[in-house]
Length: 150
Image 1: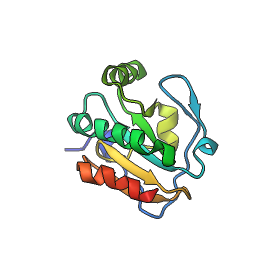
Image 2 (image 1 turned 90 degrees about the vertical axis):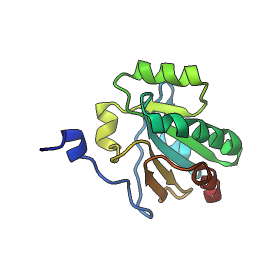
Image 3 (image 1 turned 60 degrees about the vertical axis):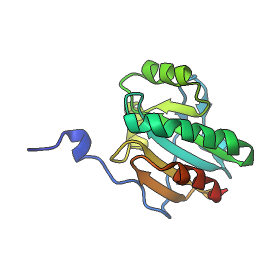
């Protein structure tokens, strides 16, 4: 049996030490984040979906991480793979999450394809290189440990 195209084409998370080019991202609140806005910060890229049970456990921890460390230069960029951006925006509002999030449109997916798995958490150090790259749900201590990259 052939896996669906989405799984067949899925790639592993980017390796530690690699560079990841970020595109300009239009967020669910219609604001834009440009790579220059993130220069010199630790950036957590977080692929998620409103229907993902593992994301339901991890998202509040990701939100807490950003609230605790944003003043020190940590930014979370959520990347929703929901079918519609309205679903993702409604979910964030319902949960009260404060992290910025974009919807993975076909244009974004071409430049920043979702690695295999969900959730996926990729941390870019202040120099833009990948310092952590994990597919699947993280333990609370792993999420708290992201602060060590500050």
